[in-house]
Amino acid sequence: MKSKSFKRSIFTLFLLMILTACGTGRLGGASDEVTIEEGDIKVAAVGDSITAEYTPQSGYPAILNERLGEGYAVLNFGESNYAAQASSDFPYETTGSYEESLELNPDIVIMMLGTNDTKANNWNGPERFKEEYTDLLEDYLELESVSRVILASPPTVFLENIFEGSIDPENIEPIRDVVEEVAEEYGLEFLDMTEQTAAHPDWFFDGVHPTAEGAEQLAQIFYEQIEE
Figure 1 (cartoon, one colour):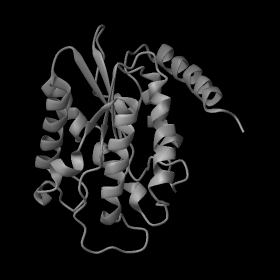
Figure 2 (spheres, rainbow, N blue to C red):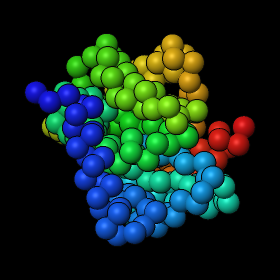
Figure 3 (cartoon, helix red, strand yellow):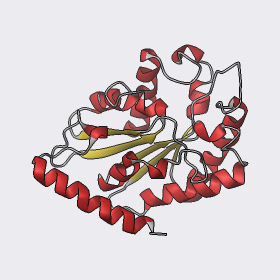
Figure 4 (cartoon, rainbow, N blue to C red):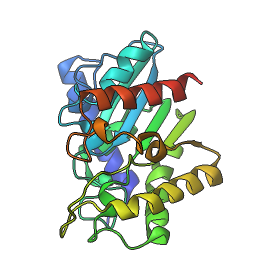
């Protein structure tokens, strides 16, 4: 089996060929609407559909990019239905967004994953989640460009009907605890998005995905974290 570094090298070569041919300073689909200026602090928003919000331009990263303003470039690397664990049905590390987020060489990484890890077919307990979550995290920590990593626990889930293969709200709290534990062990910033959203079911139109107001609120929470 080829290593991650080998696969990444191939992807890098391919990406450079595309950028050279196109003559652009932008990166792939995740960042089509964000132009990176020289000297910008690059922020990689890594996550699932809560981050992606169906299009890169309608999720919280686009709003955060506007609020941070000049000197920042926030890029949306959210992938709908993907999970942090390599053993999950849809591992985030298999996506193009994962590869692009690494090739960005970000200064700040926001990582908000875990919601899809709660599904019965993905969840094998806190220890397994911690092991595989940490493996993914270390791919970003290996980047020399990274100066800050914000580990956000998944937002509270407000689903009432749980069915086979669905997101399970009962596993959100154990994942929250693991994310906090990992942040403490690595000396990283922890943002308790679970707690921050617990009293706001109105921020989510289907119990999971943010409304327009919800996206605004998530962006504000991340904005305050970055500014502090």
